[in-house]
Image (cartoon, rainbow, N blue to C red):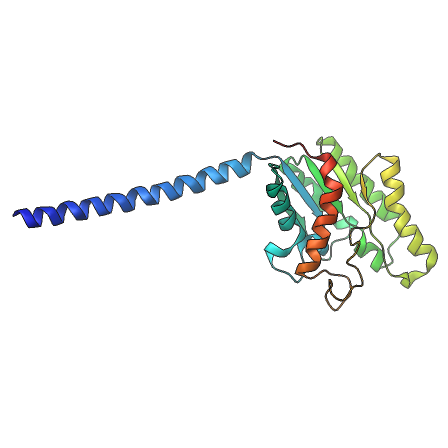
Length: 222
């Protein structure tokens, strides 16, 4: 092998080594990020389509926006989106056990809107919420309860009774309460989809800020 060929051969070897170590570096970085994420305490955002982020991208839903707020403020938590569109308190009760295997430190409980919109029995809704709270407490998770309001489709008595369910549960079980999850968003054209209920991407920014304001007292800065 003459000198020129030898130089070319060495260059090729060096280039391949650089590519190899660059790839290893990326993989190690990804693994470290994954390990760090897995080791962070979990905040479980548990709810229906308002939590799942119906009609918006994953980055625009409130759990993702809340994750960004936490990171920006120096809090080391992993927010898990446990929202299912169309879910009721009964559906939430059936699936909370599986999600509690994540051992969340905090559960943001946002359920009941679909019960109210369907005119389901308020006693059953309350019972389901109380059972979900009991299961969360058994796992030593703290609960942030999200209050909800509904249109007066089923009359004033039902509408007021619906809102009172959240207030009474918060008082009885000494839970922090978000008075109205969709405060500043519901029925506002600039923040909601045509149904007047589900937030747009920008509307979820307002929702995330509402949740953030009520969540902060429960957080520990790492």
